[in-house]
Length: 224
Image 1 (tube, rainbow, N blue to C red):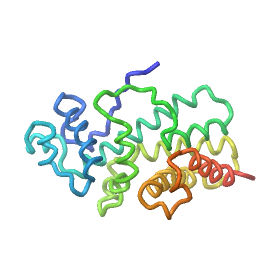
Image 2: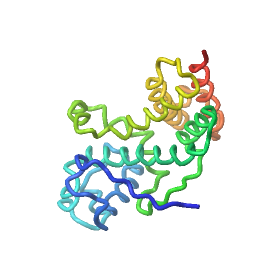
Image 3: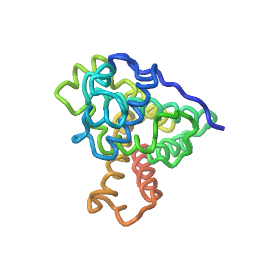
């Protein structure tokens, strides 16, 4: 069963809510495809306007710059991922099962249960892997953080940390391990595709060996 999903985003991310109009949803749809295809560095609102079939000025009515747009779509991804985590772990009792779900979600090995027609989550996942850290590795990160732009990412990390504490209540680094797990999963997937000598999974197209590594990393860390 697939479920309809509507995510309410932080108003500090946009000038006009893109989810409130057809043009706004088109901007999000085509920005994901374009950033995925050409990369964030070469992405411009002028190029996006051509894809959308509108004007550059109309896009600036929704987002003040391309960095804000990148932050919007990556933040949307973290919010959606937390929804997925809640949905897939709601009826699980054992924390080890929940941790397995966390790892499989991070490596896109779990079936998506939510319908959002204008967002290609597979392409967006690729953007998060390749471009996602550009949302917060900036000189303005402190101000952006005060505006709570990264709250969905921190909420996801906290929810994962809580699962770790279910397995080992005495573990003193749950949030550090949660953020390390997310970043390691994405870094290893990037290395696997582009810099295979930096990983042990470059010769395999399968994701399962990486899943095994992440399970080893987490469960060994949580041992008493």
